[in-house]
Amino acid sequence: VLIPSGLIQSRAEKLAEDIFNDYGGCMIHMLCCLKGGAQFFSDLLVYLKRCYSRRTPTVPFTFDFIRVSSYKGTESSGNVKVHATGMDFEVIKGRHVLLVEDIVDTGKTMAATIPHLQQYGPASIRVCSLLQKRVPTPSGFVVDYLGFSVPNHFVVGYCLDYEEFFRDMDHIAIIDKAALPKYDAMIASHQSGRSSM
Image (cartoon, rainbow, N blue to C red; front, side, top):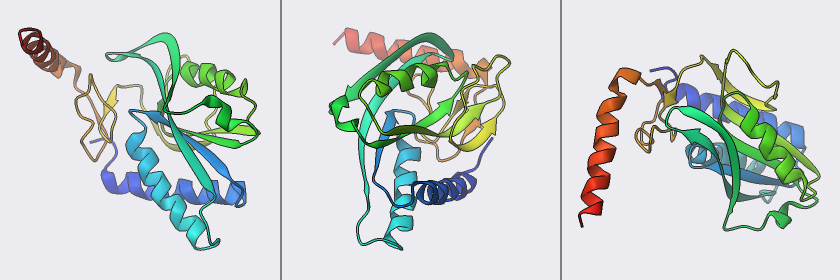
């Protein structure tokens, strides 16, 4: 186990307080990067609600979901795709956008995502990421709100996955690459079973 569940929750609560203090109670439009960021986003939202409810009669933030993809297996493909999920990107015009991500690897994905969002005219864009890898060749992208800096290994759990496996774990762990063929075989077996139906 790299990061236990309790430590994740403590850090998410502290990040929520930092976000609340920095935005000074103004309206935030949060964008959750699916699927990996879903659990972190959900927990961050709970802690943000607590921060706001202690100080204001309403909770001044809205949110939407996007998909930002660059991974295939355990490696980043370098081909970044940004998709709206049930939203129109025009809604972020003039708003303070907080992009909530599960993990920043080289930073190239976020470096490509932000210009894509900026073309819709938000007032500001900041990034909150649960994890950032210590990679040998980072792009120089700086996360505004960071949960944990982690070693350059493929990590799973807390909604981070390997080909959809391990999303259900409450903690974060480094995957043993020697075990991956077992999961690849399970995927192949599942796909062949579906194709024979």
